[in-house]
Length: 264
Image (cartoon, rainbow, N blue to C red; front, side):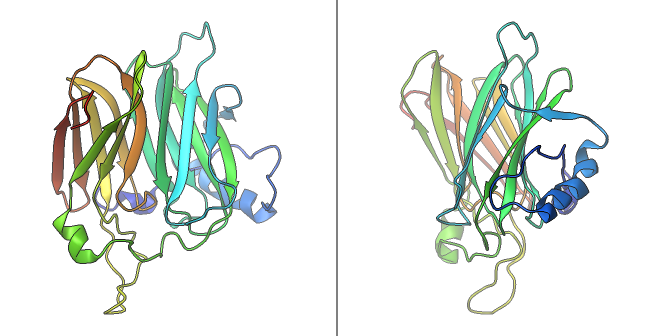
């Protein structure tokens, strides 16, 4: 992704048939204004039965809004899941992230945390292997997430920059795992409380997760992903080590390898 490509990452899709409580005609107009910038004239279908999205109705912390999506293709559907894009309509850079998954996956799920700058639809748009697009959206009541001061002391944040925490959970045919990456993920809209100057945007723009040499998922991110980016996801229970590589907008690269069972 180009260094400042996030500034132009605007996304859209078809208008929802009914607006959730609190939404307005302006919300719909915003979405209409965004939709052709990334998806062009492509048709986007209702994601019911294919794609689910979980968000709070009212966020406790607008800078740390939990978001979870799951894609499961119907029985007999021979297609696979290619990617899922998260969008926050009213954020300065609406595309929070695009997640791309390993080939051959018919079911994927992932959770993370995003910033929400004002009352907004949060959307997930899934793309299948044949190029079809499916969308679902929730209306989230939150404000100020993109300009909220960092939660960590700047000196502490720099000292721990790029460190990762990896955890695994109950195993089955697939394991659940979580990776946290220590990074301020500055949005460019936050003000230094001492100098009263805006802190320049500096964030994780790319994450790659592999198990052994096989990809699990990759992410292209923007300013809407929260401080200390955290991702919980499923992966095969094959015992192979998990490898994570991260690149930020200053081209700093961080990497780690973790035991898939112990998490260390």
